[in-house]
Length: 331
Image 1 (cartoon, rainbow, N blue to C red):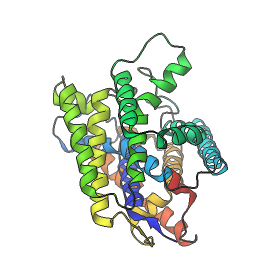
Image 2: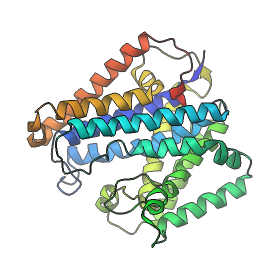
Image 3: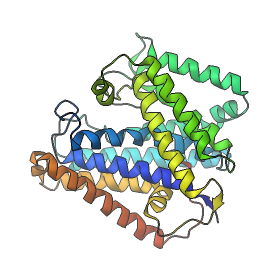
């Protein structure tokens, strides 16, 4: 069986960034308000910002080469939904009280299972549209991100636009990134790194056009909910990483590597996500509350250790499983 190795590797990069910063935040009082400008912690925090848009780009790309049957997408949606509920239960049972909102760690899975549940409908609509219509739709979504309506009921507000101080991944700001991923995925296996770089440049131009803050402000602004500047610069950064993966691995289907850690991690993304949060909650709940009082220097090592442990566990699982196209490719 063959796979798009560049997509697997890009998803693996997103997982490494996410797991590292989660481990780092678990083990220290790191926050955007107490990080010294241009310090190593500042660099690491900013480096991790590509994780979310890179996930969504890979998600959109993978949907274009998955079986389009509703049954397949809905089974995957059920898997992601059950993962989210299991992780929330694990957090409630084992994780000690923390300053972060309960359930925030796995909230991205809510976006995934709803998007997968509705994918048979919105994916058909998107792929059947002309490019001018697609551009107009994305522009409309970005304008709604910049000027979201107010006064909606709580649940529609959270799902569509997000709300300050409430953890969610709203659809209006993040769907343009997924739809861009679908459009790039349609170009496979002819997609070239320079096309992705061109998309990144467009995001940078749009970002500079909408920029009105000091650099530190937009680097550290909260993504709950994300502002337009945040969406644009993090997506440009994620596109640059995707272009690097395409340049290194090519855009053709190839036999997957069983030893490349990024590819292995990317092939089993849901497993890696569940493992890293499960380990975090179990370790935090085992009486190691001292983690929260560690200096930030130690936090970096905890983040790195968590990445290595998850890589080893996922690699061990992959050695016991055939190399074929797994269902995890779709998310």
